[in-house]
Amino acid sequence: MSRGREYDGAITIFSPEGRIYQVEYALELVKRGSPIVGIKSDEGVVLAVLEPQLSKLAAPTSSKKIFRIDDHVGVAIAGLSPDARVLIKQSRLFCQSNKMTYDEPADIEDLASAVGDLLQRYTQNAGVRPFGVSLLFGGVDDHRVSLIATDPSGSYRGYRATSVGRNSDKALAVLKEEYRLEITLDEAIALSAQALKEASDNDLSADGVNIAVVTKETKKFRSLSVEEIQKYL
Image (cartoon, rainbow, N blue to C red):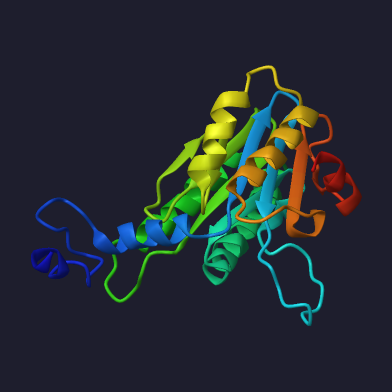
């Protein structure tokens, strides 16, 4: 333990075991964030999150865990919201720049790769720390339906279904058991709600859940209403 502590204060130094402790600490922070779930089907993609419980005196606001990046892509976050805000801003700029340059929606894997490059740069420069957040991109571009997760190390990976955050192992167990390749979008929404129920420490209510979809037919990001979410709960 004492030997490991010689290396856990600097982001630019590998330990003798080949580890970067600050990145591992950031990954541990993400595991403690509110759970998020993403599911892909041939009809589109679903993003579902447990929203943080706010004081009754807090003014009602829009989602703190799901954001629209462009018409055809949204993102769910697990970890530090302030860190996520920086990455979301860069993601939106990437999509706008791509639209102005090529007159077409950004490829979602290219978007995830660009964000991964930024995340990775913050793992190799002295005087900075890794971003303490994982992003789950879901959308439909001209090529495919995509669900791609990033992590603080800068790596990214595509999924058919996944969960990140607190109790994500419980949500993943539900997804592994219930997911099938021919799943419809409506079934995917119901499965995402089921996975969040399993990951939640308390009973779910429609006010504490947010679900968004991007359909293959419209290629439009849309958040479900409280009434629609209640139906799936």
